[in-house]
Image 1 (cartoon, rainbow, N blue to C red):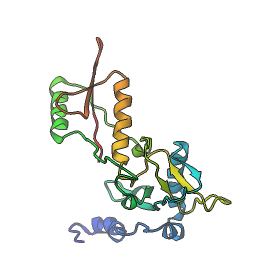
Image 2: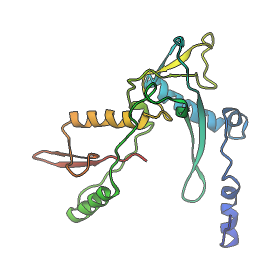
Image 3: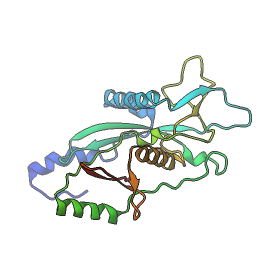
Image 4: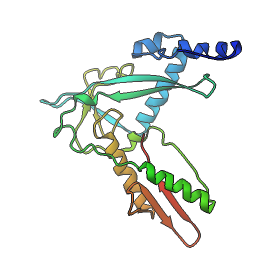
Length: 222
C-alpha cells in the first residue's frame, strides 16, 4: 500500500492502512475484538430489523427436509477522510446450499440500465427538476417467499429451550438465491398500486403524472 504525501497526511491515513483487513471473519471474532461493543450494537440493529419484519417462524424441521446454514458478515464503512463511519453486521443465509427446483426457481432481478440513469440526470439538468436519492435499508427483507426454506438459527440468537428448532423463512433473506427477485416483485407491486406506471423503454423506470406534478422514479439494486 503506497501513500505518497506529506508527513502529516501519511500519519492520518496510517490507521486506515493497517485496518484494511481488520473486519472480523466470524461471530466469535467480533465478540472478542476490541470493537466488540460496536459490533454488538450492529448485530442487535440487524436482528431488530429481521424480527420486526417477521422474517421467520421457529418450527420443527419436517422429515426429509434440510436446513441451510447462515453466517454473520461484518464490515466497517469509512468516511471520505478514512475515519470509521459505521459498523455494519448482516445475517446472510448460505444460499449456495439451496437446490434449484426445490428451494428456488427464478433468480432474475431487473435493475435500471446505466443509460436510463444518465438520461434522467440530463433531463433533470435541462428542465431544472428536483432530484432526490434514497437507500432502502435491509431492502431484501421485504420480499415474500413462496417456497419452503428452512434455516438454522443464527449464532448468538439460538432460543433457549428451542435449540432443535429451525427458522422457517417467511420473508427473503440476504444470501438466498431468490432474494433479489422477491424484493423487486414486492417493490413493483407496491409502486404500481400507488399510481405509477412502467416506462416503455425500461421496466425499472416508473412515472406518475397528475395535473400538479410529475414524478419519475428509477430503481437500482447494487
